[in-house]
Length: 201
Length: 191
Image (cartoon, rainbow over all chains, first blue to last red; front, side):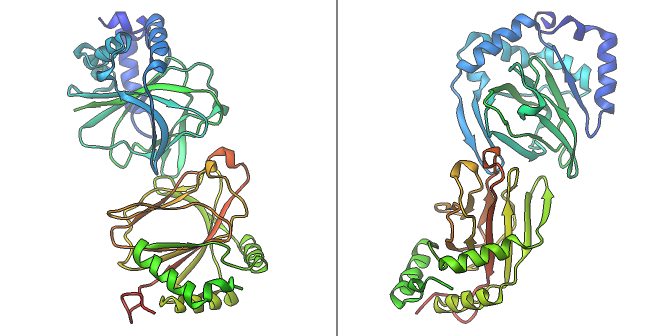
């Protein structure tokens, strides 16, 4: 099952062990950035299906972006299959191998679209049960100048910036009062699509 | 100098009525144009200090002492039956600035007043101030030049300032915030 979705490079046990070590060592908190993670055909189909989902604009003091319903409710077969994979036991075991986090309870997962002036201000993601945050990017051509970066903080300083590159999976451990991160404001008219959520333990 | 229309008894009464029923009031063209321009100049020359705490706020502020204006404002507030402001602080919000909703509580029947000095602003820039009561309708304070807003607070009140986006370019939202303590002689506003 895993080989149907994940790029073969990420199934090599030696590489998985190295990635696990990186996850634990990365600062300011445990995280991984995995470029070219999914099989090309799978991610192309998902990237093509997601923009057709209904998005709702969400605004609060903390954020401004557009979001789909939780993808477990989608009627699109490509997205449903993909969501079922994210929620499958083999993939959760795989994530445990990568991160050491056993998160086998429910998952949250929704599609997000950020366009010009959208943002998500710094927060730690902590809510009861959230153990592992994930996000992967479905838009091509984003550069640092476009904004929409995922930034990690130590106190008042951004110490890690991740450009939302197509088919890159980001994982990080959710730790209260530690895993402060933001999505910087999108500064261009490009649309930044992603699927993101949490694995619960 | 204050726009004299706001010192007329009938207007004072109307402001008090609005504050009592709606818990907030906004007074446009609050200062005469020369007085507004003088105060704006004074504010812009203040030694602003930027404060950044990512999970709470990003803005610049400076204490303001404008004795003539403060005297006139206190006299006007006295006509409304309100105390003189205890704290007066000038704030400037530029691109990337915001205040997140915090758990800081206000005093019951305390008042917050804002004097908007921003010369021009588009709502699409962001920067709108929102006061959320425990129950009821939020009060939104968009930047309208030379507008004086008074908001009655309760212990349930929370507030935030919407993030200012890149379309604001070099524009800054500038306002003076006053904290007006509860009038201890009279808990209700009466003429």
